[in-house]
Length: 316
Image (cartoon, rainbow, N blue to C red; front, side, top):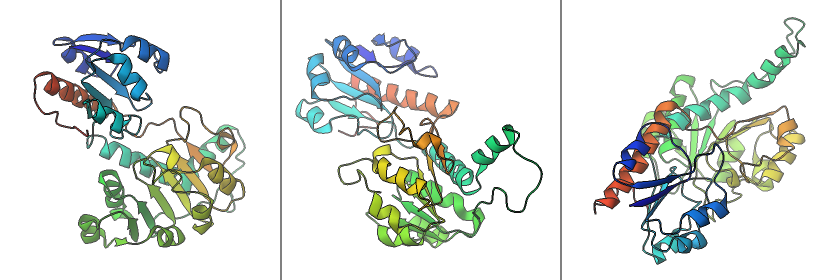
């Protein structure tokens, strides 16, 4: 099997693949340019790609004989699924394994924004601290605050369950009731407008689809409390970034914690200058164990396909 891999991966997955496949691995520590993908995919049977790689009909047609696209991510909005189906190409992802790591990071952002951790850290490093001041770096409570979860799938559920130690009322929106968080937390399923109006912390956990693109825009931000914070570890384009910048500048909401962006790797330049936003370089699942396991899962999908078996994480 001829396999194009768009980035070196942690762990031993590539060594496993190399025992049964001929690998063409992009060796640079930067994204593989689109023109390079199109050039080097010619004649390849498989593609192991990252969420930042756009895999559309042009890429598929350039291969000529592509059989499988193994996405090194749980989301697969970077792949044209309809084009893959039309060409009989199998598409797989790496779900489940990154749930805890991403949920942990969402909570790190909640604490960082609500308690102004990053802002206070910078304040001290700049030697601006002159001693304890009862009016300095005042944040907002986490214990007892209302947590709003938009999208109660694997990660949204894990984020909600982590609230148990903080006596938080939990609201959620989802296409179906979530019996687990209702039983464990007394969580209430509500419409998104009611959640935005009531929650002190709004955490986003929906996939990027045509329906969820700009799910949070000016109207939705205006519904939020001025003391509320917005956290996004899902996909950047779920938020209208221009509207978010305006809301943060005008303090219509208290703050935001972002791990993902609308036009990655570009970050809206005005976000970088705002003190009430914490920005991270898409590290939601970035732990040694998680990323190595994701590579193993991608390899498992490819090897199952190679052996004529059903890939364990097939999405199309």
